[in-house]
Length: 290
Image (cartoon, rainbow, N blue to C red; front, side, top):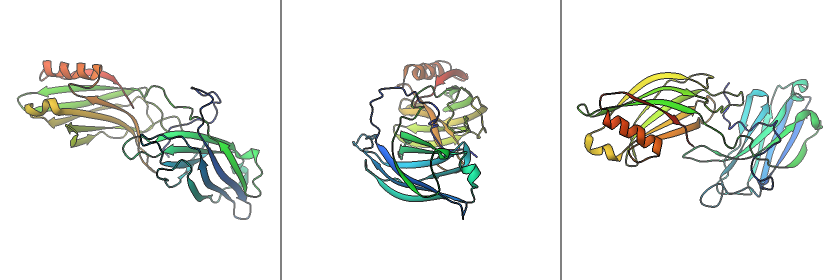
């Protein structure tokens, strides 16, 4: 089962960036009922969380995992504009034999919810369940640590563009991707590609590829023609987004490309090559961006 996460690994103690960066802390309780074979996790509150939004605040929520188990994943509600959120939510992992519970690590990831783009990781906490007495509910305050995958390459996408001035079409072909960033706890992704035709800031038309299961170097070979009259070419942007399909929750953005006559240098080069070679499929690799 695919997990929706930014893969904040719990093993690495080395963190990039300044060690002194304060990410706030989280309060939670954990306990196990032998009578019901149920592990109870209560997410209580956060304190002094960093502001992630332009407005100087955050919209935090918490994802829970029992690593390395990928079957159990839960998340709290989002607390809008709140750096000291009170969640007070209880999560039950029922029918869970104690001998399996003690082999798990409770992993909490605090994220800033973003309606328009990828949720921004704030920090993480890992608690090996064999290190605590689960016979009665215990409450902990833990400092959040930086998510271990805050940066790094998102991978590359090979795209061809073909402009037909007679038919007034641009055909976008999604050929293949390489070295995609693993978005799932299992160390992989289930990628697919969305292609939006934009006119100025308006979405005109959307196409998407099939999903490639558990693959960081997928081959798509799918072509999508878009009607683009000559007089709107200069206002046209093709937004290509590589996504990680998640069956259970929100799909993750792996990375994006904006193709137009005025985006970044590599994108503009591709656009100009397309315009100067009509009726020819012009191929170019693009690095995915946030």
